[in-house]
Image (tube, rainbow, N blue to C red; front, side, top):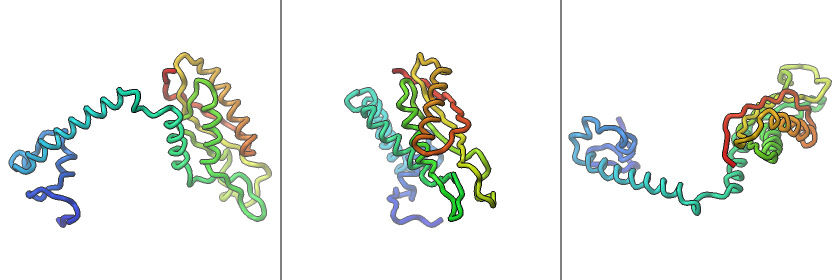
Length: 196
């Protein structure tokens, strides 16, 4: 087996990464007999414990916690990146197909959901409610409708049926007003509760 010359290795030929990946497991036969691996394991075990301790302290220190707005901004960016490549055909004209990215539609839905008290949007998937335009030779007579699959978290104490009803109304209005599409089926799954 060829060794990568750019990876630092112990005298026995093993890399520190190989030792690190099994640090939480009992030493294997080689590590029991190898002085270099035993020394490396002992040092890495101390590092692992120190890291665990520091992480625990950081999680308990309110001064080190990011503000809610920072976390929300990071999550919005992460959500947008995940969906950037998907395109939904919404109408076919003689010159071609008009498409809207799932990211654009999902962003509208997330902002609408997050603006409702007691609701936080999690994952969102959007699908046209008819077969793909590319599979149909003739232009459709109508603009696409959408099926929305939205997963949310709600604040403890929230009456879920009422929150879901208000959320459906809000999503329908936001999609119509901001994207110009008809919201068809809106599936909502409450996957978590959070404390206010």
